[in-house]
Every structure is written in C-alpha cells, then in structure tokens.
Length: 139
Image 1 (cartoon, rainbow, N blue to C red):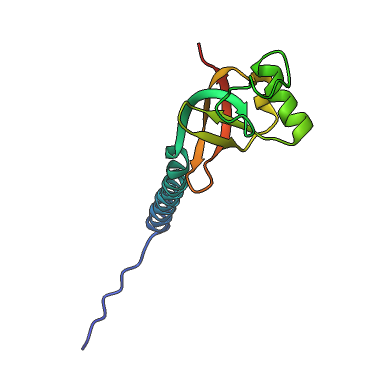
Image 2: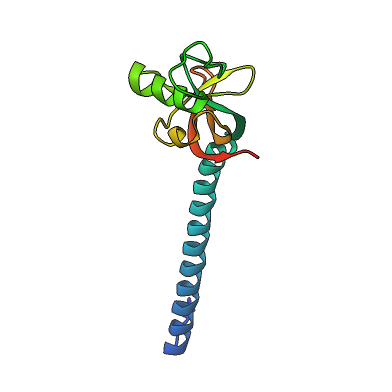
C-alpha cells in the first residue's frame, strides 16, 4: 500500500507564511523604489555636470569687446550697452576678454550691463550660447 504523506498546516503556520510573504513584498517594493531613485539621479547628474562658471563683462553683440567709445550711445559702457540693446535690437553677451558668448536670458543681464560678472550655466559650444542659471557681480 502506498502511503501518501500529507502535510497539514495549522492556522498559525499559514499566518506565519503570510507574514513572510508580506515582508518579502515590502522588501522587493523598497528595492524597486531605490532602483527608481538611482535611475532618476543618474539621469540628472549629466545635466548638472555640464554647468560651468564664466567670468567676463556684460556687453552687447554690436560692441562685443566692450569698447563703447566709438558708438557713443551713452555716457559710459553701461548706458551704451543698454542703448544698443534697446534701440538697435542688439543682444546681451558675455565677453571674457577672448570670446563673446550669447546669453539665453536677455532680461537679467540689463542690470549688470557694462560690469564684470560671473555667469553660471551650461554652454552650447555649437552656438556659443550659455544657458543662464544665474548671474552675479564679480569683485
């Protein structure tokens, strides 16, 4: 005669199994959430790593080198820069002594016109445009 061995579980055994399954589900859920956070951070790091600081003078693209003496659109470099942008459709740029960089933000630079600043942002090398995150006076 064959005897089949049957294992009968008591209610406490079933409850213990359910607790273990519930615990494992929480562990797996937490691990998946952690993986999601890691993926999001990995996607954000390359964007942040492109951020740089550029120091130079806020001027306009008509007087790229910041020498406004020939234009005489104002009493000083600041007034001439603002006048070139307002009256002639010029754009604000950052001139670092060698290169002029277009600025994505054309409103904030007005208050720094003709002054030495540090622009924090991301450079698009193809268009020589800085995507401006902030502009601060440089001592």
